[in-house]
Amino acid sequence: MSTSSSDNSQRLASLSPAKKALLEQLLQKPRPATTSRHIQRRTESGPAPLSYIQEHLWVTPTIEPIAVLIDGDIQLAWLEQAFHELIQRHATLRTTYTRGSDGRPVQIIQEKMAFELPLEDVEAWPEAERFERAMEQLNQESRSLTIDLEKGPVLLAKIFRFTEQQHLLFVVIPGLITDGWAQVVFFRDLAALYTAQAEGKPATIQDLSIQYADFASWQRQTLPFERYHTFWKARLEDRPRLILPTDLPRESVTSYRESRVSVEVHPQTVEQIREFCRAQNVTLFLFFFTLFHLLMHHFTGQSEIVIGIEISSRNRPETEDLIGIFTHILPVRISLVGEHLTFLDLLQRVRAEAADVYAHQGIPVGRLIELCDPERDLQREPIISATVAYLNEQTLLSARQTTAISFKPYRLADEEEQEDLNLQIFDIPRGLGLVLVYNIGLFHRSTIEDLLGRYTSLLQKVLAQPHVEVKDLLQSVVEGGTMWSGSPRPS
Image 1: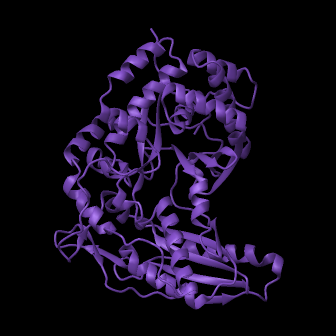
Image 2 (image 1 turned 30 degrees about the vertical axis):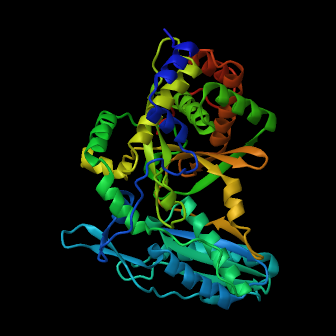
Image 3 (image 1 turned 90 degrees about the horizontal axis):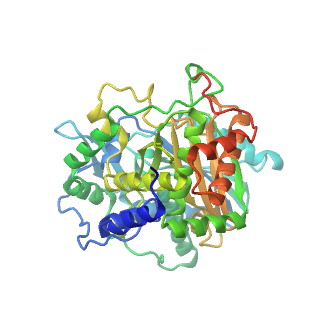
């Protein structure tokens, strides 16, 4: 029998306040923690442990290259001084990494860290080619660039001069000290420090109460690792692999090359989604995440689906203004087996499982796999092949426009190991945007366009008939007559 909405309401009413709080916090902007126990600064001055996320990433370190177009009358001496002050403000930008006496990696905060901002004047290049040529050069450089984590410096930069009023800034940061929000903090603080230089006034940014190393030490002392280990061991045992029906053989893929297909959701539909979520007492993210589980069930024919969600440990007020890595991907495993299963039933099923995952976040899945299944080769058999992320573009835009000069970041080619499919939901001024990022070594663009089209079709059908059984929803999409029938192609 299916679970009625009244049954679901009774279940929700019976949840403890803590469980309800976890449900509401799922993948939303970090909020101050309710506990009064603040993260304290470390009392010792020696090496600090790495956070659990850092420890996993330290094994195979990556770099995060960022290109930023700067418009305005910029003074390079002021910009370089702003960088020096940024390095002093955020200890992660002057931290080196090595093995401690017990063989485990540790981080060592340096009092000072060298930094240079070399200038390459390319004004002689043809105006129409400057940006593309500079970006291509940066892409080439970033492929071979490495950062010496043991010696430093850990922050590298250079700047191209296009004209007196336009420059392209290239910044490279180690992957184990940055995430999406950290990059917002990086450029927000850099802009504030530059503005202070230009105005001859102190920067209008608050002092940091802690540094990232303080968070890492606190996490090691407070995280109930054994309980988390037990939870994830049960979740990861006999886990199904999401077998995506690819257009091209996986064996031929030697590197990750991404492309993306996007669509904007009509404002009227966005309002319908918001009303639906309010009625069901779920977040927008949870709605789209559940819908993606349904799409992957349709795409693969599998009845048990594992999809990754981006989890942030930046949920305490002390961590909000730090440059450091707090986000990682964790798997949510959902069964679509059930007699008369409706979308509303599935939504509550995903909600409950996602809340459990959120309650046991803090340790990256790679580290858990090392503990639960040390023989597994994550390069050949990844635990997560598809992910969903919710991004607030308005927040990112506001961080770029805090001074007379404007920062406009650009993505550089990323050939690090990534998921095969990544659905991104953007909260944009016009409403909502959906972007499906894919590996072009595995999928044709036409397949991804069709997949995103089916996703939006499912969205409309769910809003119109949320009580209809899942099998009937999917059948109506198949009858829509697009390019594939939902049966897996050889991978």
